[in-house]
Image 1 (tube, rainbow, N blue to C red):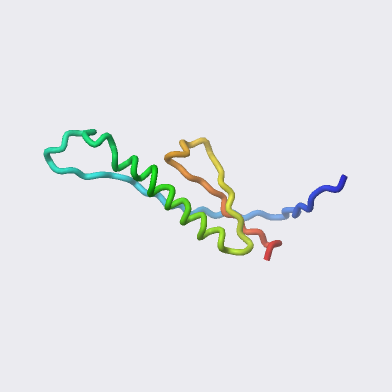
Image 2 (cartoon, helix red, strand yellow):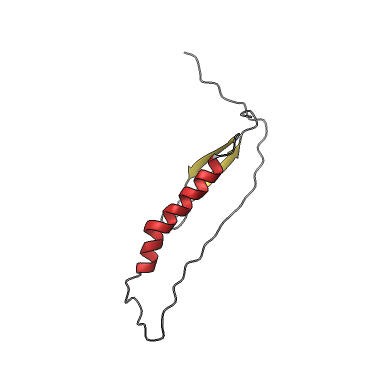
Length: 92
């Protein structure tokens, strides 16, 4: 049985780039905590987060020779999105 072609990797270099977004909401002085039941956070999670991840993914996938691989290091996926963005010299 013929094996699929796999590039023999002789050397791997690594780098790191992080985007960290800290969320917060500010309210009027008369606000009593949790009155909105964190609606602002729910909006971020349901709408903005998805749009950010789509925009990042679309941007990274446009570049030949690079592949975007979703990964997980065990953090809560609702709080941390991790990817490996791998350059493949044999693709160009």
